[in-house]
Length: 155
Image (cartoon, rainbow, N blue to C red; front, side):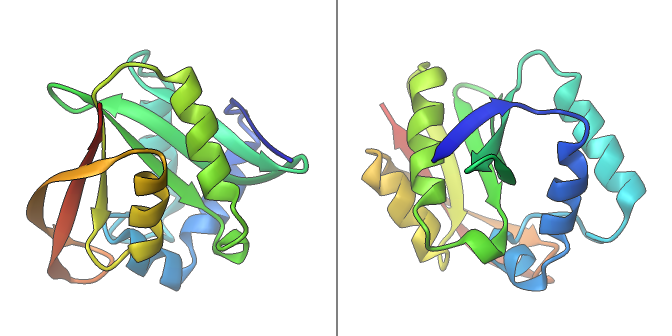
């Protein structure tokens, strides 16, 4: 069973271990320049948790911490972002978590971004009604290269 709950301090250890996976970093592309730097990680998460404009939840699968999902306002519309433990990819967890999160965060339009080759993430977003509304290019620290990113929106 997939559930969402507010982030607890002990969740951060799990989130940190998730971001250490090289394949997950490659797919996310815009993660930390040095994912093994716990100080930078902790600072980043304190900023997230201390910002009342950000809605952030821990994703649980059968009670086990498997990822996080959040919405932040990046200008004219909120944007969602998520990270799932790579060992749990392909199990429907992200799809279920995004659906639950969209029931909680009801402001529309809401946007998401995915690197163009992250087909699984794009499919998950499209399943919930997101449609591509644009593209951007940016330097992805995890890939050491400029990548094409799709901008998707749910109205």
